[in-house]
Image 1 (cartoon, rainbow, N blue to C red):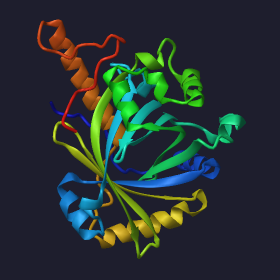
Image 2 (image 1 turned 90 degrees about the vertical axis):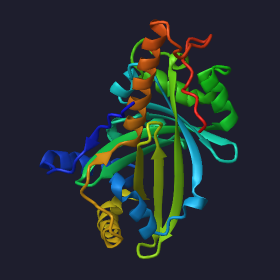
Image 3 (image 1 turned 180 degrees about the vertical axis):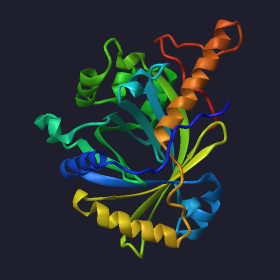
Image 4 (image 1 turned 120 degrees about the vertical axis):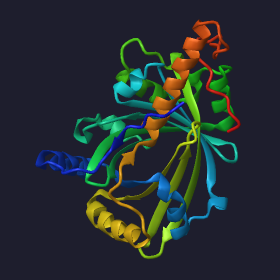
Length: 287
């Protein structure tokens, strides 16, 4: 199956867009500068920087949504992530958000973070993320349908979801979209004196996304962006290519796959069967 990836191409930014981005940065907790590397340059990019693929941390990412991606359309992301060693984490994310409009009680929560993701060309989005911790085993059970999905998320996360989810969309009725296998490596760039994160997302159709990112305080975002751009250029990394989004690529791939399986099942084929809890099992793979 072919994955249809939505991408953003750096373009001229209007004064209004830049003003909105600056306003979001001012009231956010952090800024994450991201860059997607063109597929044909993955090997050369990894070789040109101090990335050690052998030491990369394997991860398994599951998103949860309705089959027609109602949460995605509402700007909500529900994710669980298994990490090597048995740990796991969860997040309920809302985007875009206006930091000044968020409730004070939410901003004071130690588990809530407002962050602005910035792509080349000053393309940015501000999101609010409520995080939680769990175990890899519990995530597997929720995906298999032997544990209620609500058990993965904290009381605060469940309330945040209920407040923003579309009417009639229940957390336990969501279907798992995944897994997507991820390799994450972190190194300190000597020239920058800061941490650089590389993530290689491997999708089940054979496509992949290599993302390079670094985080900084809002007050230093433009300085760090300029320095990072020079660093990447010095290492031969293309800055102005099309920018693919990891989350949307995964959501669209698995939503399309789920739709195909449902059509096959309806026509009498060997499609994916629903669980007793009315949720469809994730596509089973070796990953």
